[in-house]
Length: 455
Image (cartoon, rainbow, N blue to C red; front, side):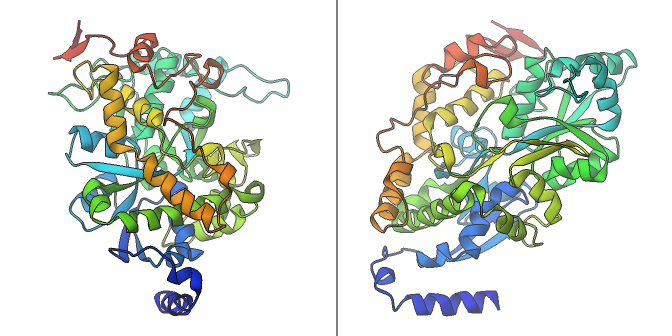
């Protein structure tokens, strides 16, 4: 019935002058993949609010079992595009894992993740966490508070296991960043050992996002880093406590992207522009009027075909606050950002941060020149497509000129020290200097050989 109604809407729209002036689409029937996370919201909103149809696109959205299945679907053409981990197009393009040239014309959001520990671990951390005047834990919480717990596990001969969603996920890199900032080693990768657990104090492994709470409850892992609503789900179920959000870890850090193959973009340039236009409009809607549309967005996302979690669980992070323990709700208005702060613009400097983390932990085994980072970023992130789509929206009266960084060279201003938990600033124009500034991780000519770091 929904498809029938959309078809009727599209037929009616064909009569309007605005529709007649649309791009000549090379392909108008598209299938996009996503994982059941709240940051797939621009896809759901573009579908439900008719923005895809406004561009003449007949879109089917399909939930995917995991990130690998999703990536494979885009590469083999079963999916025309997908909600992706930002690391996926970069890793595929440089040949880490499955090799394919994937690009992104659209960044889906900023922030949106958290790190949660089990109740048992939380109780052991509490004596090491400073308190506010009202007795509540002081946030952000450093991994220094976790270090004594990890040592206790070691003394008992037990591994300290934590989950993340994929080897090239933001969650893997954020969890590693948080641990390393607190003096805990999250382990290296090598060409011979892709477990990521070489020389680790904390052992990270892959768990699909919707399975995180159950895996934590079963005791298989002692904590995890994941996107919403799966941190808040742990609070609602009473099985774990989020210790930090990624907004507190690194203010306004980049998150997911919308990925398509370079081949798709080359063969379907107008279709690529049209889908980018629709996604920009969805992102605008999600953030406009100080998040006034978020309750409606939460209702959409709570449906089984999208995220399928309870309305209250999704609303806990999507409507401007975050609950750390039952009753301990704190204002974090920018926990989920979809359009503000140029969230949708695919910055080269965002891509380069991901590449530095791949190098830091050994997924990129050899040292690379700064120019290499720039070249890879420009081969994957496509702000020129984004800005062309944005220009069309402005000309159509559907977006404001002032909302887009027309004069950007693709690099953000350096992230200041005070916006990152370890107090180390990040400048995407100087990736090797940034790597050298991080106390834990590969730098310079270093590489992992066997179980040792050489160089």
